[in-house]
Amino acid sequence: MDPHITLVTLGVSDLDESVRFYRDGLGLPMQERDPGSDVAFFTLDGTWLSLYPRALLAEDATVGDDGESGFSGVTLAHNVESEERVEAVLAEAVAAGGELVKEAGDTFWGGYSGHFADPDGHLWEVAYPPLDDEADGE
Image 1 (tube, rainbow, N blue to C red):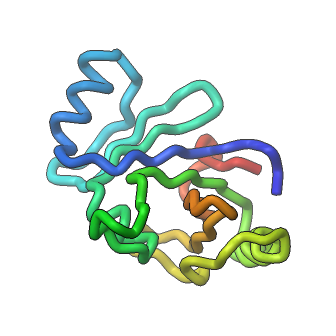
Image 2: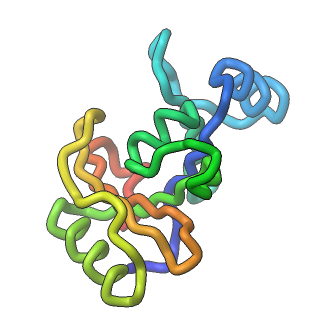
């Protein structure tokens, strides 16, 4: 795994309020967003910040958000150049002592990803986003 983070996703309780805070209050540059979209992306220097409803983020990572699962509302993302690389990095993480939380597979957003937890339970998504090279980590 290359030592960089391409995307930090914050699980938020009110997406519109959070967008106003980060875009209007802090002045972060936001990517164009379709009306009614469940996600917002901000392009930062070398990393993207994503805002996503907390319950949907927990569902995407298949961890549940019952208040007792330890889900912090944050996932870290590492984007790679292929579906095969997603599988390889997940296997590397498990071999290093991580726990496979969600097997790799096709996503609702058109990519391919899976999740692992580090020994402290911090969630990482390893993803192949066949979008544009700006978000690509490798």
